[in-house]
Structure formats: structure tokens, C-alpha cells
View 1 (tube, rainbow, N blue to C red):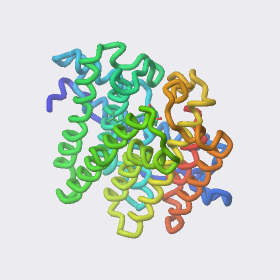
View 2: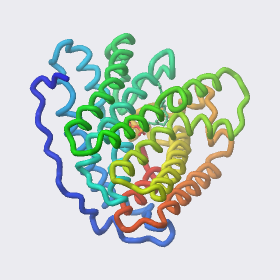
View 3: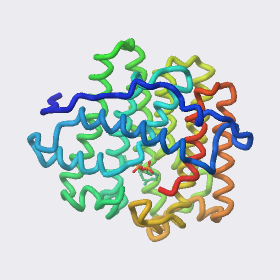
View 4: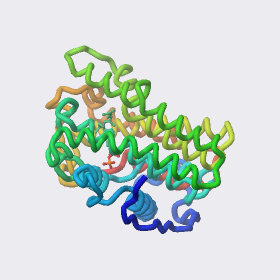
Length: 333
Ligand code: GRG
């Protein structure tokens, strides 16, 4: 793939977990819901590493055809939290793997995620105006370019995985298992299938909470779960640890989605960078819709406690992962 004057990546070689991130907290078994500062430092360092790699990998905005590269970069660098790649890296660290191994694969996950957001915002899907604090891709570049920008992001996911897989020292088998994990999570039996069920459920069909949980687990949960499992696979996790990470991913992913539903009711638009109240105006099924706000918050916290409990057999290296779990429901955006 042409990199058109790409800048070479410079990745922090530090794989040391900040001490402050691994201090234990009894109530959440290591997760610290209130004081997020040290966690913020971890999140912002990992985000920078992911961004640097993505900047160096993608063709520049001036690369022909310039419009597509401009559109891709517009959404990719619009200010996403990079939560899925960071979870991937933290999961890799949690099983004793290192950051450099996970980084390119984690960055590929962000390409996949951004594609899903660009397509989700399209008029034929959610028809949204704002995303990541900016106008949505189709509002700026037009619908056909936005569709193609999503397609390019999706395709680049796999070229990045293959290119970095070929260049690194991982076995082809391990690289292929990562590609399989991500592809399966995002295809018709994962994210795409969940998106279809979500669209169907807005057509007046009555659904129950169980069906809502199923939609969430496919539409948003599958990519969270895969991100965390991929980190485990890259860190050479054995079957027991991989099973624990899978449970962590499922529980944390569901809690994230419940928190997202709650933020849509009581979040701050300026902080979130998108309009709130969208679920209600589009008559979407949500956790607060079924349970009310207070019970939804309790439910999200229970899932996070379960997620953290799944990491019981892990050592201090799993500190960041535990704390990111708490952040997933405490976040303001
Ligand atoms: C179009 C195939 C296809 C799938 C779309 C992921 C998805 C499926 C739709 C997103 C709809 C949505 C906004 C769901 C709420 C949860 C969610 C994915 C929020 C956005 O993720 P964040 O908060 O966003 O991690 P940033 O911008 O920080 O990356």
C-alpha cells in the first residue's frame, strides 16, 4: 500500500504499568471509579501511540484521489477515544505481552470501528449530523464519498493487519487467528448483524430486554469482546486467561452500551460531541427506556463488577484493564 510520504512511527517502548494504576481498591477489585487522573494519563499515552501509528500508516490527505483520503482522515482523526485499541493493548499487557506487539493490531481495530461509525451515521442508517464533535462524514463530503470512506477504512483494517503481521515476528497462525477474530466479530453474525437487528427493531416491532441485550451484544459488544481477545491472543494467553478475558469483554461491552444509552439521556452535548436525546427522538429501544435511569446505572455497575471479577486470577499487570472497565461506565463522553 502506498504511504505517500508517510512519517515513520515512533512508539514508546515502555511496557511498564504505572504503579499508581495497579494499586488495589477493595470495592471494585482494583478498579478505581472516582479518581481517574492516573488512568487518564494511561489512556492519553496509549491514544497517542495508536494515533501516531495510524497517521504513519494511512495515505496523506493530499494522496490521489485526495478526496477519499481527506474523508477517511476527517473521521479517523476527529477525536475518538480509541477505547477499543486501548483495551486490546491493556489486555495484551494483562497477560504479560508487550505494547509494541499489540499496537498495529490495536490500530487496525480503530479503522474498523471508525468505518462502522461513518456508515452508522449515513442517512440510510441513523442519519446523524454530528459525530466526535464535528459534522458527520456525509454532511461534509456527501453520501457517496462517505460510503466509500467507510469502505476504505474497512479495507485498510485488513491491509494493516496483514502488512504488520508479515513484518513482525508473530507466527502466521497467530496473525491469521487475529484476522479471523476481528472479521467474525464484525460480519453478519456480529456487528453488521446487530446493526440489521437494530434497524428492524425501530420499525414498530415490540422487543423485550433480552432482545435488546442481544442487539447490543452483536452491534457493539462483539467488537469490544474481539478487541480484548485479540490483545490476549497477541500476548500468548493460555485458554484459561483467554476465557476470562472473553467474559471481561462481554460484561464490559454491555456495561459500555448501557452507559451509552444513559449518556444519550443525561449526557452533556458539548462534552460528547454529538446530539443527545437521539434515542428517544428516533424511538429506539434502550436500557433507560426499559428500566429507567437509576436501575440502568445499577445494571451497568453490576456488569462492570462482573467484568472486573473475571480478572480475579490476573496479577497487577491487569491494573489498567480493571480501571478502564470502571471508566467505561463513569465516562462523560
Ligand atoms: C454500520 C455495519 C455498521 C455498524 C454500525 C457500532 C455501530 C454499528 C453503530 C454505532 C452506533 C452507536 C453510536 C452505538 C453506541 C455505542 C457506540 C459504538 C458508541 C461510539 O463509540 P465510542 O464512544 O466512540 O467509543 P469514539 O468516538 O470515542 O470512538
